[in-house]
Length: 188
Image (cartoon, rainbow, N blue to C red; front, top):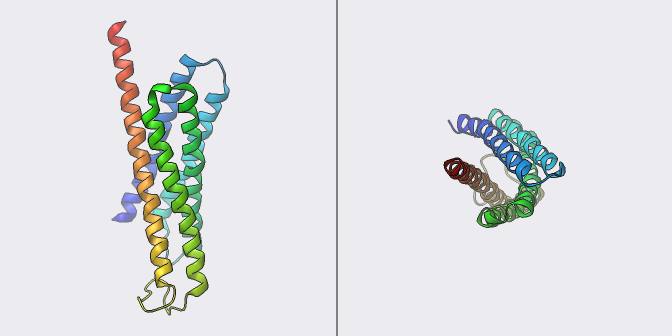
């Protein structure tokens, strides 16, 4: 069930972020003559596509059978977000000063994801150094490595909440843009 939800979330990530990119490119064409922000916007869409593909692949591979692949897909997903969120924040700052709350929300989420990614990698490596469990996926509380992998899982969920938050922020940005277009069309 959770794997189906994760896969559909990956597909929705790709679709929603491309909607955001199309909306942003439309606004950029109206505001600036430079092509650089539009290329940055396309790059952001490609990075989010890679992120969505990683999320979809994570729904097919579990930690128990393919731990290394799961780790790399998770890390790739979060690195993609760590690249795309600051770039999209840069576009918002340079072109849309009225979206300051969306910018602040993106900065907070990017800090959350960077901190979560750091601790995810740190506790995963620390846990592997001290791990003496018979079964990696059913570590008991008294076995070395339990606390480290528990912290690693908490860090991973910290980042997953960041993914959900960025999806909500994107939805609010799209809705705000839609409302602005409706107001413009009413006045014309």
